[in-house]
Amino acid sequence: MIRIHFTAADVGRVTFLPEPEPLRQAALAARALGPGQTSAAARRWRRVAASRVRPAMGPLFKLISPTGQFPGFLTPQVDRAGLESAIECLLETPADLIRAELQPHLPAEIHPYMRALLRGQADARRALGGAVREFHRLVLGPSAIDLGRTHAADLAIRSRTVLTGGTEELLATLHPTVAWQDGFLSFPMPFEYDVKLAGRGLRLCPSPFVSECLIFDEPGVVPLLIYPAVALPAVDSDERDSADALAELLGRTRAAVLRTLAAPAGTSQLARRLNISTASASEHARVLRIAGLLTTDRSRGTAHHSLTPVAVQLLLSMDC
Image 1: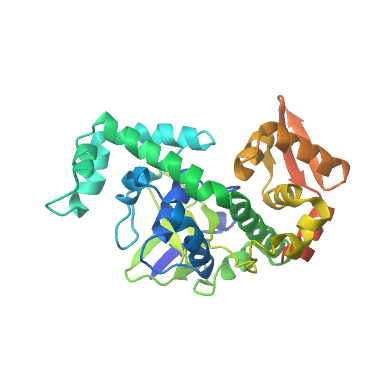
Image 2: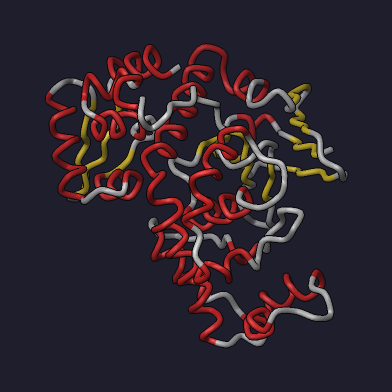
């Protein structure tokens, strides 16, 4: 059982990640391609995504254990947004940290790549960075719009819960396996672990790649709770254009823009989420702004887009 202990201050410091962290998303997706249990949505995704895996992605998969665990250094704290910044931070991981996290869990006989990584060889680090980059490009990239739609739809639902029921109602309804009572959030695990927030607050992030909640707790860092994303109705690719009413109304890319802006974003961030050019993201935002579906705030030369109340109602009526 995992128990997360909240103070009154922690309840007021519950926040959401506006978009998944690229390294953690890669780790969770690679984990979902393994033999363990996962969500129905991940199983549907896996049937298509598995064929996109290439041998060059091997260094990433070697860090995912058969039980689905992966080392903390694979998901470092990154100050700047974007995949390349995250990979740069990953490649700077000290060799002693890599050894400390890996060696206790490795068998006596290990793959030559793992030996090279433990020795801190530069080529082994570059291979890991390349594996993550290729995984994002070939495996996650083709699913970017659907993944963004799922993330945005989940955040829209959670936003409505906070507006109507408050943060405690949000925590109580995250997932059927989660219980909220008397300042404790708990969910089942095959081991006992207590997380004392002690004023740090809690970050939340939905993921379609998990069937259970996962907690990441490191000293001096705001703990992160990954929970199963809301299950959207499955739509076959051949039926998508006729089944997606919002896409029929706005066009597929503009519908995706609207959905992903359930979590406000800048133009570059929006482009990354949807795997489109910055110029294209800016143009779609302009059209949606003219239509009264989003607002744009400009500060120090940066445009920051968010949905209008009309857009929120449109999303809720068509997606939820």
